[in-house]
Amino acid sequence: MSDGWLLHRQTGARCPHPDGWTTGEVHGAGMAALGPAHDGDFHASLVLTVVPNGGLTFAQWQAHSDRLLPVRLRDYELVDLKKCRVAGVPGGQRLSRHRTVEGHLLLLHQWFCAPSGVGVTLSATCAISSYVEVEAHARDAAAGLHLPGGW
View 1 (cartoon, rainbow, N blue to C red):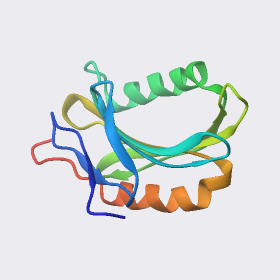
View 2 (view 1 turned 135 degrees about the vertical axis):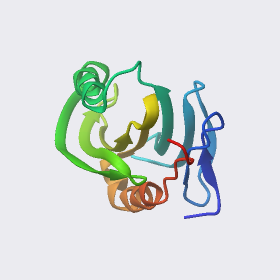
View 3 (view 1 turned 60 degrees about the vertical axis):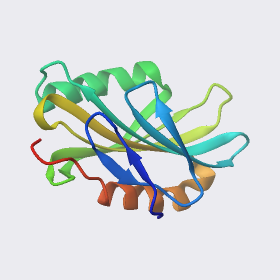
View 4 (view 1 turned 135 degrees about the horizontal axis):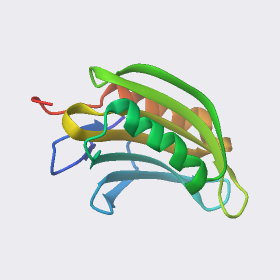
């Protein structure tokens, strides 16, 4: 990992990203780091998002996510879902796979929690061919995820 951080400016939530990955804002909801292309033109990514969860409980927010993912992602298949602590608060971890429009098989690994009315999600997406490398970066980012005090 690098000294670089994905920083959500409005809340101060942050996590480290790998050396050499480029960063940018994601539609005002978070920050992304893009890695090298694998499997054609697909770039591995780490995306940190922080969004209001509309007053939903953690369980309601995740039930909504579980319904939305198969609708938004082509050939979505949940591989594993479990509870765990994320950045020191109760949360969960999801591993799934889906396909791009071009048919490339992707893996999506997410860590998520919902402190104080917001939903925090760290998503790592990569082509199958880069899973081992990207998964190591994703776990480092998840271990370094920091939520500001007071949440």
